[in-house]
Length: 249
Image 1: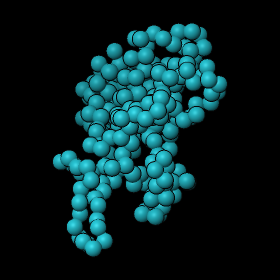
Image 2: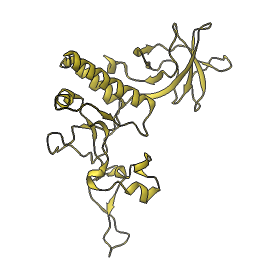
Image 3: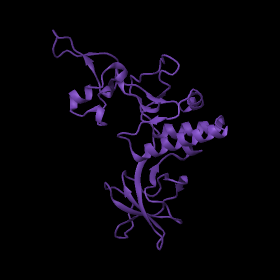
Image 4: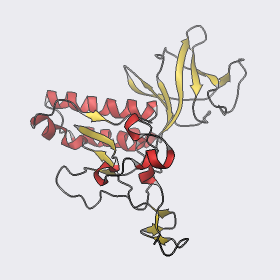
């Protein structure tokens, strides 16, 4: 059962829009998300006259569904017999996939141990999910119609986590992590590492070096190789990201 991620407007029968409008097939994982585009109504005898359908200062988003989130319903779904939970991952960053999969894995493990209903842990999981979300959440149709299913104003998450880099290795002699840059970052940023076996690790970044060993103030260039001082090894493919510290509390 699909439990988390962007909901396709297939419920409106418009999946082929991507293929017709952009040549990118949604059925092959290349959806251009035309449901998120701005639209206006045009009457055939009034060409060039565009009538807004639902508009604010940023435009009209008449097909813009919120993202599905059924984390809180996992016990109910498991007890109903669901034994496979699908999480959206196509066209998403490694940070998104890692955080969401990890949260749902922990939640299912806690359910099996009988400790799922800890309010503090649930709030922590939801906070982590919201940090990598692009839109507000909805429970979809699990309890029937949801008046908040659509997001016609195209809301944005102002506190979203940002994927900054991917760990390529660890230099034990110099105690440096090698990172391949994915977004601009530098000393002073509130950075974290998401390690496969450890979870989030806070990084106090005071110095940053380029591939020549020269100290730099920012990692500015796409896929730039940079080095971060760190006192212990970090696994390859760990993810470096930027996040407000209070979102981990």
